[in-house]
Length: 395
Image 1 (cartoon, rainbow, N blue to C red):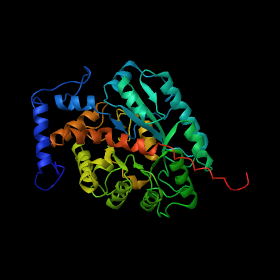
Image 2: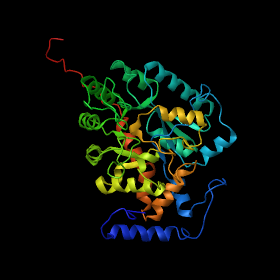
Image 3: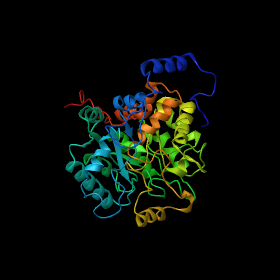
Image 4: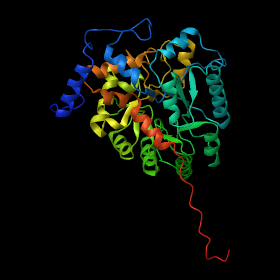
């Protein structure tokens, strides 16, 4: 694979010490192979299994189930599906879809709250950042509710309204223009509107994470400039490695990091690489590109799929999904990336990072530590304005 090490220059004392420590701590990394929770399928090194077991693993775009049918959200999980979730290694997932209207957003939130409630032994709905830690300790998956479009914010007051319903993250736009700004597949990008600037300020005030994954280039940069809090690109990749309109420029990645933001790398095939082969190693290339560009503290995971990915969808639903997007999406035969298309894919990615000699601490940051830090900073409501001192006003 290209970029076999995180840094292209000669090894530093820190990287050599980290590699040596990893070898001592996990002497069986190259000798033992282990299954996860007794599950059939791929096996992994002892070090990988232990890293995922200890880490807070946050997937900042992962829906519980890709299903367009009316019963998709109401159908209970089978024992096999429940076992897959428990063996996935996930500690937290950001559950968000693209919606157009306020009614669609309310229906989505109601359906997902019902799904989490029916499987309360598996999911924990998130209110604050500490809920991620509680879910990890309890062996449950923290569900972060989000929307991939801020169109449902029909008035500034709707931000606080949706926050009260449990919404903790929202993209400003999906792929197309809305009242707030432009999408990644729009012909022209006019940037953030005056109304969009008001929404950004209100999201900062209530403590709702701002996401620009699907925003156009100028809208992305405008949002980063306007926000007063750390924000996210929850699921996108680096345009320097794959020239796709949904990917982000180095300029945007640098601007995000300057505001202490975090970028989640996705496994959607055409965002990972524009040619074949396309495998989990190429996902690691994007992680390493962000790390070299702005530091390991600003990159994480946002798979943009459910546990199994897209390619095993029923053919009619698969065709329907592809038809929703413009030709610029450049779908190929498959949507999922090889090695990142099954319930235990986080182990495959971790194994690749181990193979590339990343240290345990850095891998833990990538798996979820960086997003945990970001969410703790973004979700704290702004302090209320100090009351005016009325002394001396004759009261």
